[in-house]
Image (cartoon, rainbow over all chains, first blue to last red; front, side):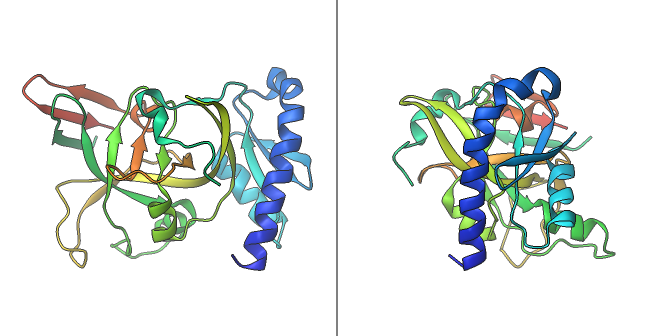
Length: 89
Length: 149
């Protein structure tokens, strides 16, 4: 993994952890939107994943940001739930 | 509307699809190139019980997709998180031929934020409702299915 990818992965994990804590307070006003995050903070909300990703690319030359959907319910995998091994890194 | 047709075996329906990085698609859309190079077929299992599409590590490494976030899933072992990517799903008009050949595709314009599956031998992509609800899926008793979007 390149150093940029490693930094990005760390940022994504940090933003995700912070986002999960904020999520219950965001759902009321921003459900269905996409959050652009950097350094553990929400920068802005966008109507689509692509809009959030483009905004991140434009605003952060170092590419250190991530996006998250504002949705409370986790994804379900149906019959093929077993295809996921939670222990896989 | 594009119409994709295939066969199911009474238990499952697998369809060849292409996964296209959103950045690559945007670059292509704003170019004059008639052909989107580098697309390749992956085996997608149609799963109406899955709320979102997932891709195998083979797809990620084959296309060099860059992670954009994490997504949370509810599976047999409870909640777990997986790295996720941003891409489009494209359907082949016919079963794709040799890799070097030009195989017509129709691209589902909705961007998909899909997580990584664990390694799975029987398919490469779990095609979930985020893609399927963009069109009309029909499964017929004669062993065929169609998807119009």
